[in-house]
Image (tube, rainbow over all chains, first blue to last red):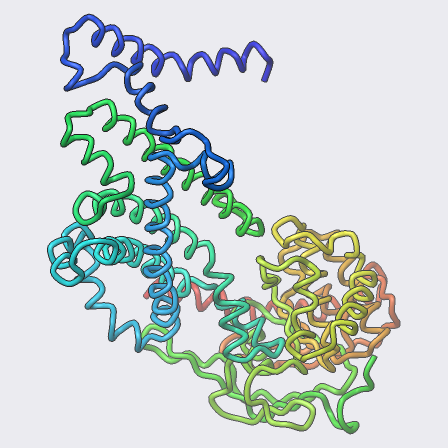
Length: 274
Length: 270
């Protein structure tokens, strides 16, 4: 693409968002809408910046410079939420993966467990909130329960489909070369099912991300979901929007990271067109 | 490379092999009364139209699908399941797409518990022998069909099996690539003298490659005739003797092809 063409493309992709922001700013400045309902984007930006920065001035006695730099409310909230996603996802996927492999490989396991899973699968994790609080009380345990539940089914369903879709010719080739059951599973079935499994992982992380925000609105007192609900209590709509933007950026970051990881892990895969 | 398998007996013996499939509520007799002996070091082609059971017979020898009745022994031992001494090369290559060329070739040796040093030496040697050295880090998706089949051949040669079972291995390749792989296979066979059972529906391919051509009948698959090919190698497909054989085999195969077509017409009329 030529430089002019690239500049044109950039212009086209920015025109609508910039135009909307300007219109929004103008409407707010003109006083047509109360800043409590919809604060101007400039106020959101200022609030977001304040939310990002450390609250106390840098003090070498307190620890490292890096630690200070991320001591603001926003970095701490983001880390708290991401940590919940990681732990919750690890629990959910850690249970779903072996179960999915077993159900995909052994028809008996599939026949025994599939009806139950088909009934449980359509229940959104959010619907478990009352039970989660009853069972686990408040704090991290119910949040982690809900997140792992959200990650569990996408990983499970895709792992089953992945194992069942392994082309039998790979199994025949491996057995012909002398592979026993264990080797067959580890070196043929799992890698062959990997494109499906990673699709499940990606969907599972997406659901975990949605669930963490909801879970933080009910049971805990830190994290991005908690923060925007707290800001609403004080009518800080600028902070609500600043929090939402942060949530969006975190989600985007996770998705880009996962997409890179997928691309690397599946670099052998021929892709859709092949 | 290894000496021929234990003793000097035949590599493969089939006695009264029968195979029945249940297909759509009906029984299809794929193989019936197959009697066949393949000597060690011999290159045998199974030739016939599709539906003659040649791949079924090969799969039975490979141990993927046991015969319904009859006896099948390989190197004096009854066939009980797949084994690395009867290494298979598939038409669809069946390379593991998540492994590089090098990893595919090393796989069988790793399963056999070879030392890292021996694996490296064997793989290096085979990649060089098959002209794959510069592709060792590629994944199968980045290779042409001919290259993939070379890798598949290197993968089975790595475990140094006494026998190669090849199921229309060059069927999906273009004519020029097929000819060069046929020559390469003959060269490898001349070096190692492994027993090769090669399934094909190419009459010229069968004459070009094998010591004996086993012509099979269409459903049920039986041995129609065994035609020895005594022409010296390399064989010239344009020579008079080659073409005399080709005429003879074509006549035999076309009889079966006609039965196949009659059957299809019959099936459509049902």
